[in-house]
Image (cartoon, rainbow, N blue to C red; front, top):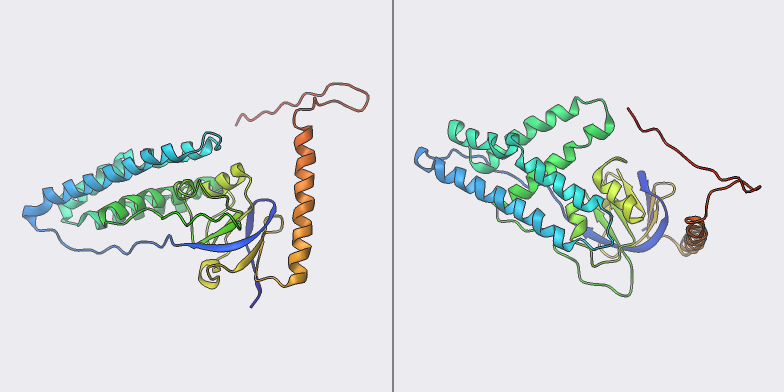
Length: 282
């Protein structure tokens, strides 16, 4: 069955490929009371989970290709800074000691307290930084609960894959560095999310805010990602497929022509040099 989903385009272009579903489901966190005599052991368990999450972020830097956009390392550093903040590294320890929360529940409660503040921010870019806090905390929760990072899919030399997920963090995307993905589509996220910024830096067509893509698309289904209009076409018919392949070729030729102009000095038709300046002062 073919159908169309609409979302927000965050990185232009058109790509055709096969769906690769990636699960990034939120972890279910249990709540229980820690016995008085075990409180310091629970604090130590929290510290160990935090250390493992920091080490994982540090290790991911080694997976960044030399020609990768600098944003990738910057986002990893941001997640480490979030975990180093006292609101997440110290406050949960006090909740464990004073309220006898288990480590996971203490961290979750502190995260929810922090993210509520982001909801009150008017600026969309700053408001969406709530996702960075959630993604950093989920890495610690996975460490505490014995979870593992996203597995890399099997290499595919025959076809370009399109990642379909409920959500993706920049750290998740680094794990797929060996793969030449054709595009990314997610159920949530906005045009200023860090995943969107990474997709733009990599020049990969991407659509966010599709709401139900992960639930309705099956592994291996043929997809068209129209990053120009923010449209995802699932199981396109032959006529639509041929039309989009033609559009994809045209866009590719246009990009090649633009690349030729990249190093060309800016000048008017009569040879007058043009210099472009920008004032980004707030």
